[in-house]
Length: 288
Image (cartoon, rainbow, N blue to C red; front, side, top):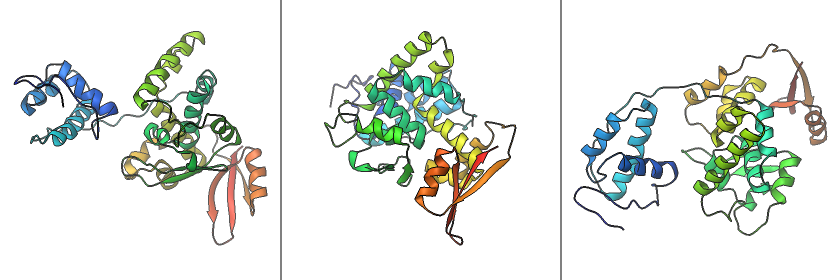
């Protein structure tokens, strides 16, 4: 499993629960002087780090998984969680970013935009999860339930244009971490080329924040947004009620009794609100 000494863990295996952001946190703790075999050393490094309380919480969570994996007993320190309002780009900036990427990355970003999926959920998508215009998140993260989304014809075409070399849509890449690194590089290039520094701030998770915010302001239904995000706790969803103030909350409302009528409303820019079981109609609306 690698070489150990009395004072330092020289090799950190990245597998199981110790992967992605958690793995990077473990390596970062080690670089900052933590003896990963000594929980007290880890606590001291975390306490002295000049980072936010949320970052310290992430360090604690990462090391907790690492400690359990190695069978190390420790008492995890507690840090107060600081809730922050997510930063949001404009839709035009998201679209500029997507348009400036190569097909596989552009498709991945378009999926994030239309489904609000977590990056890991989109990364795990298989060809079998696409059925016509319906995309199913069958590998949900953080205790979420599987979710289905009706996606655009544009996105269906983008997905089907990718090479089918694996059961997973994005299978040819070695890891999500490598995919993310390529994305960050391309994002920086586009921000410079387009002279738009805000593009350089767009992360994979930004698409989720943007989508949830827009969905809430379209539906004003926080429970529906919670379901679409897969949140277990409504408090995590409530942040999206305060990100954008639209000047007008007046709507055109329309009903659809069949798929053909729904298609016409969608093409006209209407958004789905809910399905009325009593009247057996789908309710759509569009901002005036």
